[in-house]
Image 1: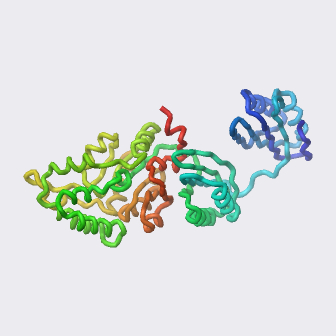
Image 2: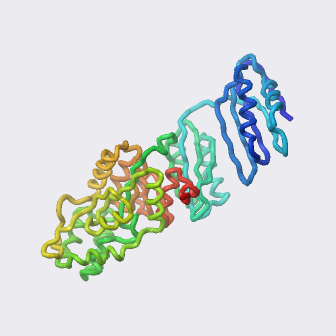
Image 3: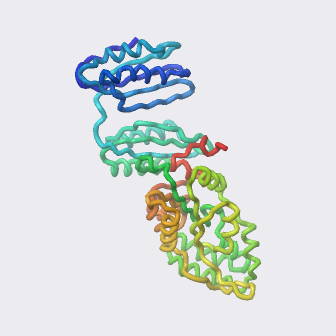
Length: 399
């Protein structure tokens, strides 16, 4: 029942329990190993996976000279493990060596095929890395897997995976592993075309009769062709004379990106702090952010005189550099280091913010923005950001 793993002296053994899952299997395994602690047996690693009721539970143990593998087998035989189709094996293995730092590889797509999985795992192998764990974070509305990968050349791993992800059409994030991932985080989002489906300035343009002209300037700014601050002033100048009531009208037309409410609700429930840093306007966004429970907001301010827009701004422009400054300020106020911040944006004026954050995510962004981000999302659901934080669909849907 328990194949003999030959060898005496200092050794490392892998104890594997597999078969139909049932209540108490883990307790019996660890009870068997506990009885051997006085004989020099020490657990060095544990892993388990259960798929459709099929269990694989592994324990890596080290022994000293006084405890051969046969002693482990004998202890396992005294417990109620090997029953109802469950088997246990003891195998001598080479102790884990190499770079102890691990990376988390998260990838998602509307549906992930076996061929795409093959490509990802070949890229891992080609960088001389190994996958230690696989977790299926979600199967709807997108497929998402998280891998724990260990290898000595992290740069080669990142480069290989990034190249493969682009070629097979999956979104990818590669991050360092560690407990910090579930520490308190600040998640800063752009508003227009990220948290919102719309560009506020374009909706205002519809009200003033300069829609085509303003839209063209917006596109140049998003592509990084012209300076954002200059483009914003030029667009705002075209709003001169509009009644202030138009701001309420525009706010009523705003559409949240699919998954935005789910993202914000889940972040707050799990102790994360959401924030919005926008090149848009406080007068439009502040009431909406209050409704959504977003406490931290930084955006531009429109000058209003005699209940009409003057075509000018008040104060400093929240541009590319301003967004990065706001992220740093919010992080200091919330009390988290920059490595525990996440930034999400789509435009060229988000690049500095994405670069400063511990994790920068380009959301349905132009190539120039993706090139400066740690990860990119091409799916239309904003709550997919949660998967890059290691939050599963099950956690998202928990009450």
